Amino acid sequence: MKADINFMKEEFFRKFGDRAKDPVVFYSPGRVNLIGEHTDYNGGYVFPCALDFGTSLVARKIEKPEIRLASLNFPGDTVISVSSSYTAIQGSWTNYPVGVINEFAKKGISAPGLELLFYGDIPNGAGLSSSASIELVMAVAMNELTASRLDTMELVKIGQRAENLFVGMNCGIMDQFAVAFGRKDHAINLNCDTLVYKYAPLRLGTRRLIITNTNKRRGLTDSKYNERRSECEKAVEYISAHRRISNLSELTVNDLSLLDKCIPDEVVRRRARHVITENARTLGAISALEKDDIETFGRLMNESHDSLCTDYEVTGVELDTLVYEGRRLPGVTGTRMTGAGFGGCTVSIVEGEHAGAFMEKLGAVYTGKTGLKADFYLPGIGDGARRID
Ligand code: GLA
Image 1 (cartoon, rainbow, N blue to C red):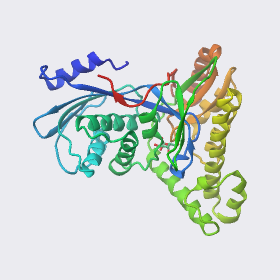
Image 2: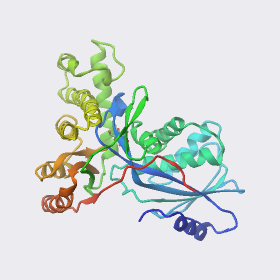
Image 3: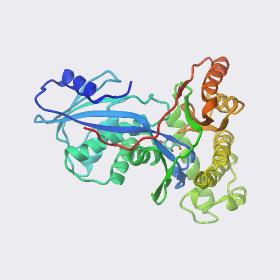
Image 4: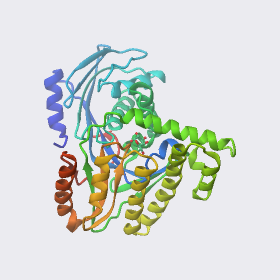
């Protein structure tokens, strides 16, 4: 179901009453990353785009100094008092918005009394950034309702800090950035070290973007993710004994021999190799797209997945089945996992005339091999977080 403003407002009034005072509606999309995976927290390149589905938030200021939070997706309406600092509630969805409110409080921007109703149509835990979407819709709303005029990059950082410090997931900046800065029909080429970015029109011609959800529950994702981050930090430490670097993206493919020389731990060496080669693939893919060379773009997507599978080890049987079985089907230009991995989704570029058969055949093979049912989405590329009413 796509969020409809009237429907959302109706639900809001049912929940909070007082039809005399109109609420304001905000929206923030999900994202899909096309290439450049596990590079953001290593100061590297990413190439995500915002989707045309996401999270809506209906919000209204109230006199009473309390924040009332409700969601159409999750049970457990919550009321908390406006405060100068907030504490997380173990396992609660409210940690995403409250983490953002807490970051505003740290800046001396106190929340007014608020009534908040969220509704999202991003599948949860699918690696399409439902968390960043909630964070940014909250950040945009707080910015407007407190007339704070923080710029979009500041809102991105608030979202990321909420996730790192309040939710406890040590993510990089890509997801919050993509959902905040998304632009219709464009992907964003972001240098995560300098935060310099450039929009690139996503011209796929007769081809379609298809997202496939493994529907695998992503139990250990956060701990495995944080483990990969520390392995990369370890690699920087090893290399720094020979050459001072502050992140892995300061190295290029010409420096790969340095890894054998400096890193005694074979696993850490492979992690570093993924990051360095992934940066090269990402830059290569972006320039291929500029030249409308989608074949090369697709080949680099495939190579990206192979590296995430063997060097970075964040794929698993479900993602690998979708990718390696998908590649055997006609009309597939490129296919890879997207997001953190360990489950979640793949993103594929498929010739339009083969899209139907791709979804049907891959769905059947996937169920046969894993016992799970895959979901397929044909997303549009949408705009970033904003007020919509
Ligand atoms: C998750 C994180 C991002 C990024 C990706 C992997 O989505 O939130 O910061 O690290 O994984 O590329």
